[in-house]
Length: 320
Image (cartoon, rainbow, N blue to C red):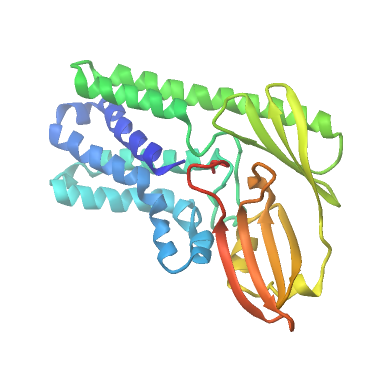
C-alpha cells in the first residue's frame, strides 16, 4: 500500500495496543509503542534507499528481502531495541516486540493483497506473490482509520472499542473484496473462454476492474464495469529476434525480467538503429503500457542507451 496508509495504520495500531493491559497501565510504554508501530509499519519500505543507486536496483530490491519471512522477525527486534533505548522502556521489550511484529506483518500482508506483489516467502521462494484484491491506495481504509484516529485524539472515548471496530471493518472489507475479486475473475474466464493466464486488477472504484489475459500467441487487455466485460486491446506476442536478444544483457532488462510476469516486447527501426521496448502488461491504462524498459541500439545492435520506469504521472492510473 501507499506510505500514507501504512503510517496511518501504524498510528491506529498504537490505539489498538491499549487492549494490552500493560500498555494501558503505562503511559511511557504506550508512547513507545506509538513510535514503534509507526516505524514498524514503514520499516519494510526502507528498501527504497536502493533507488539512490538506480531504478533497476530499486526494482530488484523493493518488496524483496525486506518483506521476507526472516524480515518479519528481524524488523521488530531492531525497532523494539531502538525505541526501547530511546524511551527507556527496554524492560518492556516483549510488549514492544509484539506490537512491532504486528505492524511489520500487517504491512507485508497488505502489500500481498495488491497487484504490485511481494516476495514474502523468501528465502524459501523468490516468486512474486500478489492477490490483486486491493488497490495500492484504498479510500475506504484511509477514511475508517482516519476517523478512528480522530475519535481517539479529539474525544475522551476508550480507544479499545474504537480500534477493535476499525480493524474488524478493515479485515471484513478485505474479505468482501477477495470474494468479489474471485467472482470477477470467473466472469472474465467466461467472457474469454480460453486457456491461458488471467489477472484481474482492482481500481479505486469498487465495481470497476481491469484485466490482462495471456494466451500462447496474444495478450488481451480489458475492463470489467460492474457486470460488463469488455476487451480493450489485443497485442500479438513478438517472437525471438536478434534485435530483442541484443538487449537481454542490459541492467534494466535483467531487473525487469526479475520482477515482471506478463512480458510484452517489441522493437521499432530508427534512422540510426533500433529501439526495443519491454512492457509489463499488467499495468496497462487507456491503450498504453506505462511501465517498462526502453533500450536504444545502434545499427550493429550495440546498446547506446536505456531508460526504465513509469511513463505516467504519479496521480494517474494505474494505481499500483
